[in-house]
Amino acid sequence: IPILQAAQAVAKRPLSLYASPWTSPVWMKTNGAMTGRGTLKGSPGDKYHQAWAKYFIRFLDEYAKHNLTFWAVTAGNEPTAGEIIFYPFQCLGFSPEHQRDFIAQDLGPALANSSHRHVQLIIL
Image (cartoon, rainbow, N blue to C red):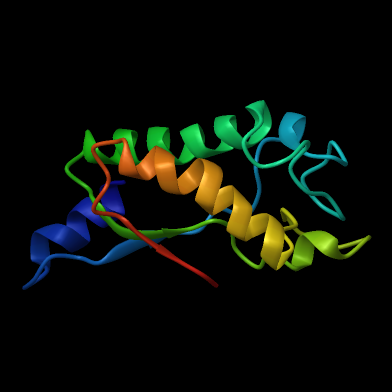
C-alpha cells in the first residue's frame, strides 16, 4: 500500500490498478493446499464460491480505505495452472466453464451490488 500511495502521489494521471489473485484460502480448495491441482470446492453459487467473491469485495474495500481504487480484477491468475497435478506455485484451477459460471453467479453480482460496481472484470 505505501508503494502504491507513493506512485499515486507522483503520477501525472490516475493509476490504473488491477488485481489478480493466485489462489483462494486452502479451506476453500479441493486439494486443501496452496500449490498443485485444486479448484474451489463445490459449484458456482454455493457457499465456497460466494465466500471467494466476498474476498474480492473485502480486498477492494480495504484498499479503498487507503484511497486506492482499482480499474479491474481477474477471477484468477493463470487459472489453468491449478489443473496441473504438481504445480509448484500458488494456484487455483478454473476451467473456462467454471470461471464463466463463477463470474456469472458469484463474482459479477458481488461487484455489481457493491460500491465497486465500476471495477472491470478481465480475463488472463
